[in-house]
Structures are given as structure tokens and as C-alpha cells.
Length: 376
Image 1 (cartoon, rainbow, N blue to C red):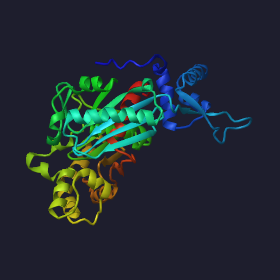
Image 2: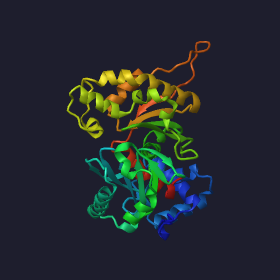
Image 3: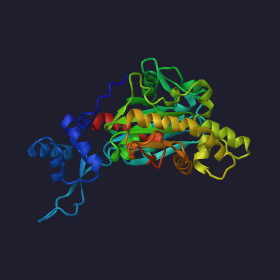
Image 4: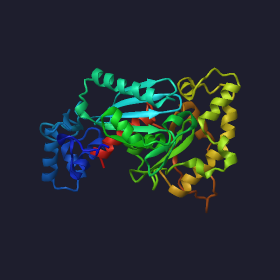
């Protein structure tokens, strides 16, 4: 098993992580503003920045406006073209691979629109796709930090195995990390799909303005991911956010899992063959959509009110494979419970759609190695 040790030029200290994370949050920032945000002395901050520039982990950008008198100084940005990470998402009806740079920008995403039922054949196709992806984008394998691998399901066996939905039986209850590291020849971080998507949202979406939020993953199943005070919260067994566990056995088929929407649409004669197909072609006027929304809202309202009361997050993000129009229809039906006192209600979480334009789980999976190695 890989020990996740980086090449010498990529290794960073805690202070360097802090500086890199400040610049990540801003995107482009002046050196003086980095110093203002740092608990280190100005001299130490400037020395660290110089070292990161010299190792091509930072790059100079165009000057920012409003810099005061004199010739404006170049801005600081996370480097492009020197460090990359790969994300893989295994869904019940498709597999997605993404390539992301240190600046957290997506380089390329490849979607395999077939059910990845066979572990061996899917890994073979992903391995070949990674080689082609690196070749197309002129990425040296030595610049790859590692792979974040995500899949629907919950962890068992001390986080070594994922118990995935029935269509992914071939991936379930085996030690995936050593198998994946042997296949790809890279370090692998293993996470469930919704927690991976929450990590992505924390770095590139709602996390840019919400320090604490809950992420709702509408996929074949239904689950959640948690970010508290800027950091992902995985729980003792890696299963924090298993929101369906607050529903009893009779309620499982009326939870907001998209597998049940697919069944209803097909019963109504709508020509859709997968959850991926719903995500790509969703029409709010399809027969069966309103009936599904009516069916799932009692459970969804209970889950949202529980998250609001227990976690008190700034936001609850609707994501996963949820079409935007469907997410907006669900949010419009959410009811916060509990009366006011003296005419004043408690502040409730803001409901927002996930802000990732690509596959949220694959994107988040690619960001997991970058966060682990370079950010705080």
C-alpha cells in the first residue's frame, strides 16, 4: 500500500499549507494581503511565498487594481500545469473520471455511460482512459499526486470496504484501496460519493462562503455529507451523513432516492433508462415528477429540519445527480418546523443547489488528495 509520500518538490510544511490555502480561497491575491491574513511575520510569509514560487507551486498573475501608489506588484495564484490529481466516481449506471490541477480547476472530465457492473473491466477502461487523458493534456505522471476514488454506499471493516447498492455488488465488501493502488500505480484516497461531493463543494462551491453546511446527495440512493467549520466531518466509521438511517424500514421507499423517481417515470411511459439519463434530459413536465415530489417531501422535510436543529449549518446544499430544475422544485416545497417566540424565528439554513457544473462526486474525489497534501 502506498504511504502517500509526495515527491520532494511537492512536499509542503504546515506553514506552506496555510499560505497555499489562503491563496486558494481568494483565487488571486496580492502578497501584502497574504501577509495580512497570516499569523506569521511578514518576513517569514515573504520567504515562504518565495520558496513556493521557486518550486512552481505558486505563480505570478496580473497585478490587481487598487494597489496604491507606484508600480503594481504581480498577484499570486496557485500554479497551473505542475501538480494534478485524479478523481473517479462509480455510480450505478456510469463511471466518471476527472483531472484537476492544484488551482482546483477542472482540466478534463470523461464520462463512461455504461453500468460499471464488472469491477475488472471497468478498471481496465479507467486505466486506459487515464493514460489518454494525461497524454491529451501533456501531464507527466510524476506530477500526479494521487487518485480520489468515490462510490455510492457506506463504509464497513474499519473504512477499508464499501457496502454499495445492489447494482455495484462486484465492488462491495472488498479492500478496494490496495487493489486500486496496484491498478493505477498511484496513491488512492477512498471515500463514499456524497462525502466526496461535499469536499468538492467545500473547496469550490458553497464552502467559499459557508463555513458549515450539509450536503444532500440525490443519487441511486440518498445520503449526506457534512462540513463543519471549514473541515469535512466523516465520523468515527466514515459514515457521517447517512441520513436515510433516521427513517424506519417502511419509509425507505419514500425517501428522495432517484431510483424511485426512475421507476415512476418508466411506469408512466417516459423514455428514460437511467439516473444519468434523468440528469441529462430532465423535464419538470414529465408525468410522474409531481407525484414523486409529493411522495418524498415528508421524509425530506424531516431530514432538513433535523439537520437544521442538530447542526445549525449556514447552508444545506442539494446535489449529487439531482437536475437543477428538480432541485429547485424540492427546495420550493421545504417547510421549516417550529413556531416563533415573541414573533421572532431562529435563523434557518439557506437552501442552495450544488455549485459544481460537472460531476460532483468525481470533482470532489479529485480534490481530496489535493486537500490532504496541500491545504488546511
